[in-house]
Length: 376
Image (cartoon, rainbow, N blue to C red; front, side, top):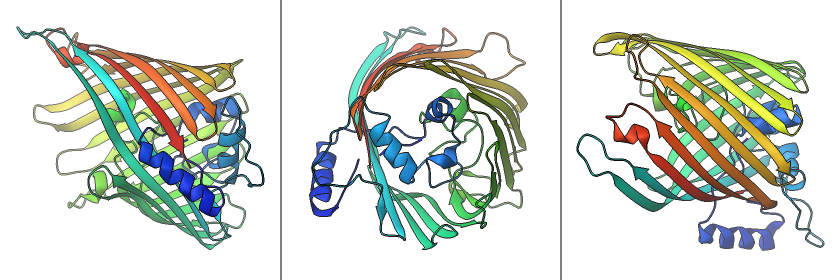
């Protein structure tokens, strides 16, 4: 789930939001699938988009204010913010910024390097226009900063009367694997499917109490740049139970550079206060200059709810860029403390350790970061 700030009614709330945005201290808690595992819910329970991520619906916004934080700041006489402006319009947004420090060890005769920086990662605005409430809507996800404005999702969405079937057409995120907030995760970088790589096409989805499935047929290149006749098909399906879920994904991209086939399994389970996630993907890619490569990539993640408002995230990741080459594997380990003191604000403090081939310094770096996450 991707989090976002609150603008509760209307003039006082808007003023408060602009003050907070000016501080520039937030990043989003976006599309964290462990929330769904912990609560035993499908993505559609909290998000306007049935595939997950982006703008939250009324339930998701309320959950983010009442269940997620350590405490709620009550405001006398003001109703709870839901994102809905009347019956036809819902809005939201998120601002992402961070402070990072990276240590790169010596390699190949170099002296190593250390860098520190503050970074405004992005400011996104979401809008869902319900032309026919509950049945037909137009959705926008616009990245407005830093730099120029970039559209990430714009599609029309039609739902069947029973809400089981959903049809989307336009520019959209592809359905594949776990929709992690962290686009730098190996499973998102290697597959090339994340919150920075939309494509243009159509998607058909099915939602029921036990099943969630989506099939997309798109141009086959990030941001719809494909010009050949080949297209991309991406399919994911999840079987849901209150304390666990398991799913599979398949993606086929037929391009001029060569065919690329991906297949993966993912799962989530809740064991007491810990929500576990796992994904493994096998990729056959004909697009390399030397010919076909077979790749493996995987992730295991544990999220321990230490107490209300406090989450400890531990991850272990694996990447084999070519199964025909020995000892070229890469690993990444992360430890992140997430603290949500009150609604609409989250602090994240983390460290990442990269472990790769000795002659590549970047594959053996250490990364430390501090971020404040806000949402509306």
